[in-house]
Length: 408
Ligand code: HEC
Ligand code: HEC
Image 1: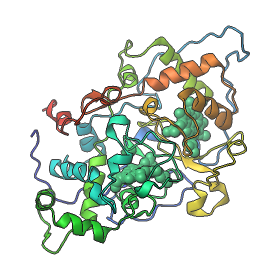
Image 2 (image 1 turned 90 degrees about the vertical axis):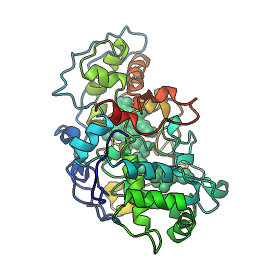
Image 3 (image 1 turned 135 degrees about the horizontal axis):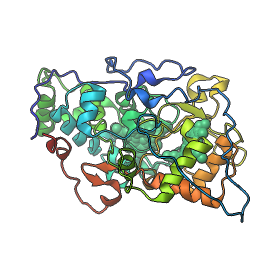
């Protein structure tokens, strides 16, 4: 037990980063748990260079020979942490204190962690959040699209829960304003957990141990008349705010450790800036800060006509939102194949090529792809002090304390 904050029970149902909304995206609906306004997460997450939703891509030429067979040369500029458009992920304690400006409420996080792993959130007690968002495997299910109760195959790829706290909106189409509003979705979705809060709270209310944990997490509340789902959502959201992954090799490099990443990764980062990936994938999460049209420069869906998803258009009905998706975070991206909302891209090499083509109208050479991938691979961070690379084989993840312990 590192901390014993005595806290008011209202902990953030926060739309962390609602302030980051770029123009053109309608204000999200208020969350069912009444978010308190919160400062945008890292101010620098939306650099002025980031494109507005509809700005055409500035034509940048990578200034590199693209002919195959031709010898390519690569170089890179030294890091200037103050002006880079990617910031290191803070540790959990700093995130809560400096960015969320709230105390880390251990009982609430413990409760949220437990609920995240609780299959009673599904109708037949078979699926928990963690079934689809396995924390040992990058926070995903490693499938093309998700599988709900009774083996129902879903329509879309499962994004990671790691670093979702940095997302400006949740879901591929941004239809949830924050983590609490998002967590309200799967338990009620017929194709996912196929339950409802009446059923779930009735099951949980019979569990004395869980109820005592609820009382601990919300000391001012009275649970004698049953459980209010909003408390469950608040706890799950708060737990998810601890799912951030600091200390990747690239972050150590950003902070001045020149030996933390390979030369290829440094060249890859330079390319990432030069060809323009960073216009969309920037900020602390290297993404998550805006919604952008997939196929901005060349059509994506011409070649993927089978499972056309209209993206944000499904939410707003606005033409300009056709094929618009949340720019995913690229943190831990080496672990979260297959890629894109439709799960069509199996390897990082493939998805990087697709991105160059459809978003930037650039046909990347093999050598360029290799370097970009080396950079992306350096973005794998740590959860509870362990690299996400290496926690696959661990039966039980260590408890949630170590992150705060060391620094006290
Ligand atoms: C059946 C598999 C499944 C289950 C169970 C499930 N999820 Fe998900 N999750 C998904 C899929 C698929 C998406 C993307 C859906 C979309 O964008 O339309 C998603 C999206 C999310 C996101 C948004 C991430 C982002 O980048 O936008 C978060 C956060 C999340 N889930 C958390 C949870 C929590 C918390 C639970 C438990 C209450 C849960 N999930 C249960 C499959 C699942
Ligand atoms: C115009 C904005 C934009 C630019 C520029 C851009 N991307 Fe993306 N990127 C997106 C969007 C939006 C998605 C999600 C698309 C989808 O799945 O529907 C995405 C998805 C990805 C993914 C897959 C993420 C996942 O979790 O499945 C990777 C990897 C990626 N981009 C890398 C790159 C690289 C490398 C470049 C530069 C060559 C780049 N992107 C340029 C907007 C952009």
